[in-house]
Amino acid sequence: MYTKNTDELTREYFDSIMVVPRYLDGDIPDTSIELFGKKYNTPVMTAALSHLHNTVDNGMCEYAKGALMAHALHFVGMSEDDEFDEIAAVGADTVKIVKPHSDESVIFTKIERAVKAGAVAVGMDIDHSISSHGTYDNVLGLPMEPKTTEQIKSYVKAAGVPFIVKGVLSTEDAYKCAEAGATGIIVSHHHGIMDSMVPPLYMLPEIKKAVGDSLKIIVDCGFESGMDVYKALALGADGVGIGRALMGPLKGGGEAVYKRIEEINGELKTVMARTGFKSVKDIDSSALRFRTF
Ligand SMILES: Cc1cc2nc3c(=O)[nH]c(=O)nc-3n(C[C@H](O)[C@H](O)[C@H](O)COP(=O)(O)O)c2cc1C
Image (cartoon, rainbow, N blue to C red; front, side, top):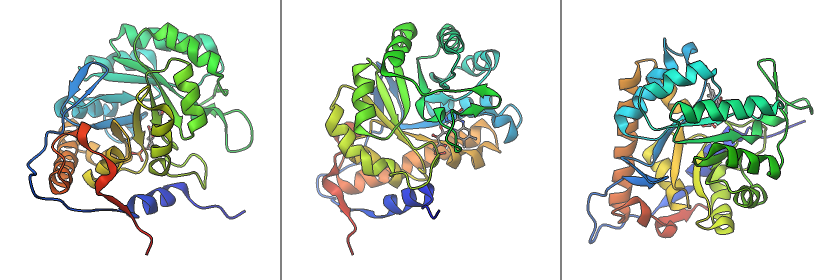
């Protein structure tokens, strides 16, 4: 069966969007944002990664240090509970993304432990429930299962801190997340978990229109530059997660991650300044044009 690689489709879509420069009455912008009642220097966030000891010694904590230095919101994926304690102790504002374990007690324990360790929010990557063989997923020997809206409601209630559903790529799931009382969603295809999946930026305007301001919208997958980040903000995102593009810098430790986030934020500032936006909340799609030639 021929299918199209989702990461390639996503890059093609980023590159099909162009920007119109506007200079008069412009200035250097402020890229700070407010999310969950806290202020961050940048809408760039560290995407939920895991197993970063394979990239560099103490990789998960180094990654967190990068976010701390950049004063950016930090996300953590799969982790042992003790490991999460160590990551949270680095001091970045941290969001723990729990996997959709079929054992509900594992989920509630992980939520409780993360909140106890100081997580500013928790969430779940609902897209890791199905394997590529038409069965429920199994991650490193741990069984997963698809979750219901009612189950999400129960996690929201147990968390007591903002709850974020990761892996939303449809208006249907976005509505259900709002109904379940989630605070936000991460619009994501989980680095192409299946071929031929729609690029997150393609879906953003539809999802934003569907949920309005009822959910905070973060987006990830394939972001490499401040220009990419700008396009997502212009299409309705409140923040952008960057994962793989920070893994190269991570080999140089947390400080190198910080420097790359700063560079990306500088690129974002340039595009904002050249399109006439002075703050992140002002950015809209008025300077975007979609390539048809
Ligand atoms: C090494 C690695 C580990 C990841 N682990 C997790 C995880 O445990 N939980 C999760 O929700 N997403 C995980 N992801 C997916 C990322 O959060 C993100 O959705 C994806 O990589 C797309 O963003 P990117 O293109 O900026 O990397 C992982 C990605 C990578 C590359």
